[in-house]
Amino acid sequence: MALSISVLLALVMLCSSPAYSLDCDLRPSNPETFTLLSQMERVSILSCLKDRTDFNFPQILVAGNQLEKTQVTAIVHEMLQQIFNLFSKSDSFVAWDETLLDRFLVGLYQQLDDLETCLREEMNMEQLPLGNENSRLAVKRYFQGISLYLKEKEYSHCAWEVVRVEIRRCLLVINKLTGTFRK
Figure: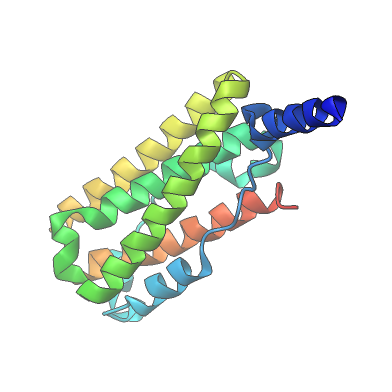
């Protein structure tokens, strides 16, 4: 009987250790987040064609099949954090329906919270690959370009619409990146 309790205790400790819980499931972007972003459209993108621009999406993310799970987790976290920051700006509240924007931000926050748990577990287990920092910097530069574009366009409705469409693209890339590691 004492042996059984010891074995059970060892299993409980093993199951609660970071090594066991490392099986953090990378999930695609929340479908509700994508839907909310689509519903936030205020101006037809067709009326904003003159405002379109190439934000130079980081090519390293397009070739996501060469990335390790830890890298993808960090990149997705960075992308969601940057999207959250972008739409949390006071200039953003003028452009969007407040209820939709609040729900969108809550959805992003929940995803970020889940990913932070995964990142903590993964960082406890291994060193982040060097390429990871390059990818995250590429994401930051990309979003800095988006912020600069909004500022240059004086946060116009068309500028925000162009950015909204670009962020939908980001969410699709997140789905592609996480799809490689889904069970």
